[in-house]
Length: 110
Image (cartoon, rainbow, N blue to C red; front, side):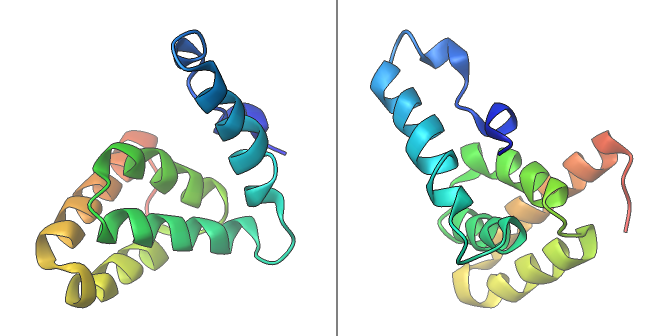
Protein backbone atom coordinates (compact mmCIF):
# COMPACT_ATOMS: atom_id res chain seq x y z
CA UNK A 1 0.00 0.00 0.00
CA UNK A 2 1.08 3.54 -0.56
CA UNK A 3 0.54 4.12 3.13
CA UNK A 4 3.56 6.44 3.22
CA UNK A 5 2.07 8.67 0.51
CA UNK A 6 -1.37 8.59 2.07
CA UNK A 7 -0.38 8.83 5.71
CA UNK A 8 -1.75 11.62 7.84
CA UNK A 9 0.66 14.51 8.37
CA UNK A 10 3.02 13.40 11.11
CA UNK A 11 3.08 16.86 12.70
CA UNK A 12 -0.44 15.98 13.87
CA UNK A 13 0.67 12.71 15.49
CA UNK A 14 1.62 14.30 18.80
CA UNK A 15 -1.39 16.60 18.83
CA UNK A 16 -4.05 14.04 17.81
CA UNK A 17 -2.39 10.62 17.93
CA UNK A 18 -5.57 8.52 17.75
CA UNK A 19 -6.92 10.45 14.76
CA UNK A 20 -3.60 9.97 12.92
CA UNK A 21 -3.57 6.27 13.83
CA UNK A 22 -7.14 5.79 12.56
CA UNK A 23 -6.37 7.74 9.39
CA UNK A 24 -3.29 5.66 8.62
CA UNK A 25 -4.48 2.22 9.72
CA UNK A 26 -8.23 2.23 9.13
CA UNK A 27 -8.89 4.76 6.37
CA UNK A 28 -5.79 4.32 4.20
CA UNK A 29 -4.69 0.90 5.47
CA UNK A 30 -8.09 -0.80 5.29
CA UNK A 31 -10.87 1.16 3.58
CA UNK A 32 -8.72 2.32 0.65
CA UNK A 33 -7.36 -1.24 0.24
CA UNK A 34 -10.68 -3.07 0.05
CA UNK A 35 -11.07 -5.08 -3.16
CA UNK A 36 -14.57 -3.83 -4.08
CA UNK A 37 -13.30 -0.73 -5.91
CA UNK A 38 -10.00 0.06 -7.55
CA UNK A 39 -7.88 2.90 -6.11
CA UNK A 40 -8.76 4.83 -9.30
CA UNK A 41 -12.48 4.45 -8.66
CA UNK A 42 -12.09 5.31 -4.98
CA UNK A 43 -10.24 8.46 -6.00
CA UNK A 44 -13.02 9.47 -8.40
CA UNK A 45 -15.65 8.99 -5.68
CA UNK A 46 -13.56 10.85 -3.12
CA UNK A 47 -12.69 13.81 -5.36
CA UNK A 48 -16.26 14.34 -6.50
CA UNK A 49 -17.60 14.04 -2.97
CA UNK A 50 -15.07 16.52 -1.60
CA UNK A 51 -15.80 18.94 -4.44
CA UNK A 52 -19.57 18.57 -4.04
CA UNK A 53 -19.37 19.19 -0.30
CA UNK A 54 -16.89 22.07 -0.75
CA UNK A 55 -14.26 20.34 1.39
CA UNK A 56 -11.44 22.28 -0.27
CA UNK A 57 -8.80 21.67 2.41
CA UNK A 58 -8.66 17.95 1.58
CA UNK A 59 -9.42 18.31 -2.12
CA UNK A 60 -5.90 19.15 -3.32
CA UNK A 61 -4.40 16.07 -1.68
CA UNK A 62 -7.05 13.85 -3.25
CA UNK A 63 -6.77 15.45 -6.70
CA UNK A 64 -3.04 14.64 -6.65
CA UNK A 65 -3.81 11.15 -5.45
CA UNK A 66 -6.42 10.71 -8.20
CA UNK A 67 -3.80 11.55 -10.82
CA UNK A 68 -1.39 9.08 -9.16
CA UNK A 69 -4.15 6.46 -9.14
CA UNK A 70 -4.63 6.69 -12.91
CA UNK A 71 -7.31 9.30 -13.47
CA UNK A 72 -6.42 11.73 -16.21
CA UNK A 73 -6.73 15.48 -16.15
CA UNK A 74 -9.45 15.23 -18.79
CA UNK A 75 -11.43 12.69 -16.75
CA UNK A 76 -11.23 14.84 -13.64
CA UNK A 77 -12.27 17.96 -15.57
CA UNK A 78 -15.21 16.02 -17.01
CA UNK A 79 -16.27 14.74 -13.58
CA UNK A 80 -16.05 18.23 -12.10
CA UNK A 81 -18.01 19.69 -15.03
CA UNK A 82 -20.71 17.06 -14.55
CA UNK A 83 -21.03 17.72 -10.83
CA UNK A 84 -21.43 21.48 -11.42
CA UNK A 85 -25.06 20.80 -12.33
CA UNK A 86 -25.69 18.74 -9.19
CA UNK A 87 -23.43 20.32 -6.57
CA UNK A 88 -23.27 23.92 -7.70
CA UNK A 89 -21.18 26.11 -9.95
CA UNK A 90 -18.98 27.61 -7.20
CA UNK A 91 -18.00 24.13 -5.96
CA UNK A 92 -17.06 23.02 -9.47
CA UNK A 93 -15.15 26.21 -10.26
CA UNK A 94 -13.17 25.92 -7.04
CA UNK A 95 -12.35 22.27 -7.75
CA UNK A 96 -11.32 22.88 -11.35
CA UNK A 97 -9.12 25.80 -10.29
CA UNK A 98 -7.38 23.56 -7.75
CA UNK A 99 -6.91 20.87 -10.39
CA UNK A 100 -5.51 23.41 -12.86
CA UNK A 101 -2.97 24.63 -10.30
CA UNK A 102 -1.92 21.05 -9.48
CA UNK A 103 -1.53 20.12 -13.14
CA UNK A 104 0.46 23.27 -13.89
CA UNK A 105 2.70 22.76 -10.84
CA UNK A 106 3.39 19.14 -11.82
CA UNK A 107 3.93 19.86 -15.51
CA UNK A 108 1.29 17.30 -16.49
CA UNK A 109 -1.22 18.06 -19.22
CA UNK A 110 -4.08 16.22 -20.86
